[in-house]
Image: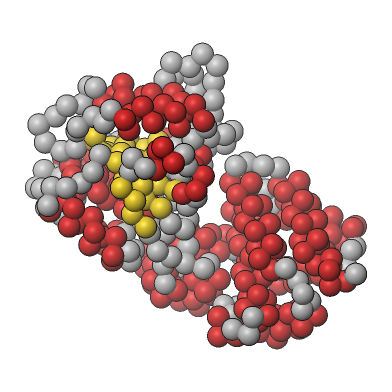
Length: 372
Ligand SMILES: [Zn+2]
C-alpha cells in the first residue's frame, strides 16, 4: 500500500517526497499529463500522506484517518468533479435527486476501490461554480490540529467559466491549511491566470511493461490480454483496463470491417455496423473499440513514416501493411484526432450513434485525397 498504489511515475514521486520532507508543499499544484496515467491517484495518495496520524511518507493504512481516507470520505479530502447542474442550488449537491446522489456515491466508491477509475456522472456537463464555492465554505470549518485539507479538482479543464473565475479567487487568497490539486490532460485549456498560480508537475505516459503488470496484478487480466491491451493503449492505464476488460464486447476484427465500410462508401452497411455497436449501449465497450481504431491509425502512421518498430498491433502486421500501402496519403494524425474527440464526446454522454456517424464522416475525409 502507500505510494505503491501509484504505478510508475518515479520522478513525480521523488519530487513530491522532496517537497514534503522539506515542508515546501505549495498551496496549489497542477498535475498535468496524458489521461489515465495516475494524476488523481497521486493526488489522493498525497492526501493520505498528509493526514495519516503516523506522519510518514507511506500512509500506514491502519489508523482511523487512513481508514476514513480509504473510503474517500475523510473530511480533509474533497474530490471535485462534474455534477448535473440544478436551478437555484445553494451547494453542489443540495438539489440532486435521490438517484443522482446514489450515482455519485457509487462513483466515489468505485474511485476508492480503484484510484484509476474515472468518475462519470450521467448528465453532468462540467464542474459547477457551486462545487468551487463549496470548497471555501467547507474549508472554513475544518481547521484541525493535524493533517491538511486536500482538494482535488479532477479534470480541471472541465470547469465552466464561472467555476474557473470562482477558483481564481480561491487561488488569489489561499487558505493556509488547504492544498489544492488540479489535474488535467489539457493544460492549455485552463486560464493562464489559474495555471500561473499553481506549481506544475508533469506526469509521464506509463510503459507497456508497467501497464501489463498492473493489468494482471490489479485487474485479474490474463497475461496475453494484458500484453495486447498495454501495447494498444499508448501509455494510458485507464484505456488499457477498458480494452482488456470491456474490449471483448466488440471484436478487434471489427476495426478493419468498420474502416472498410467507411472507405467503400457503403452507407447501408456502415449504418448497420454503427447501429450494432451503439446497440450494445456499453459506452466502455464502444470507447475500447474506438481506442483500438486510434491505435490502428497510430500504427499506420508509423508504417508511413518508416518506423515499423513502433507498430503496436504486431499481431495485425499483415492487414496493417496492406492498409498503409493502400492509403499512402491518408492523414493519420487527423484521423487520430477525430477518434480522440469521439471518445471525449462519449465520456460526456453524447449519443453513441451520432458520435459514430460524425466520426465515420471525419475519417472518410482523411481518406478523400487518396481515393479522388
Ligand atoms: Zn495512517
